[in-house]
Image (cartoon, rainbow, N blue to C red):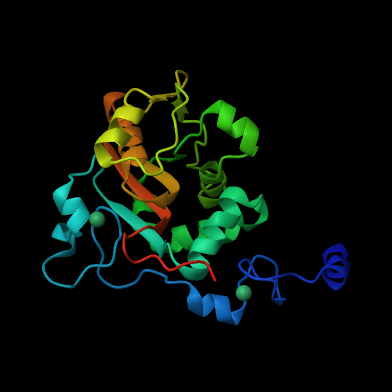
Length: 239
Ligand SMILES: [Zn+2]
Ligand SMILES: [Zn+2]
């Protein structure tokens, strides 16, 4: 009743543009068509679409082929482009915590096997100072909405504040992240399979640092899933 009244006064709007929609947390038809949901054959490690051929177990994109990963399997829900990119930015910088459940659902649909195979689901952590400024960790909010019985939003911690990775090369990113992420002292991952969640996968440097921290702490296996995959040279500008 209250939500019906609220919807009359403030009709729900598209997650990506000012268009009115029937329900909250939805995209309008135009933006929906603009989201590149990833389907078909994908890289086993990062979820990037690849040309079919060979067993799925051995499919790799060029980037994962050139740079071995610290995790064993991965999935991406959408390409970081168009309306898919807009909603990621809304979640990260637009204070749109309300859209986290919808976006978490996109991840859940893209990685049901990885979620089923995980003992724990954990986000890539933010340093406390950045958390203080931004007020929430978008990846932790995705995890909270994904699988309540496996979600461990504080499994990992940033032990030092690192500079932004934007514009840094692969080697520079690794140096910046060296020793920056560790298991929460009160948590135990011995012999467990941990599924790491992040909003965006660019080079995978941060996810790699998290995966190494988990393996160093005794995790049996680490897998990853992200909302959006950035593939260089393929991004389209926000319209
Ligand atoms: Zn729209
Ligand atoms: Zn890949």
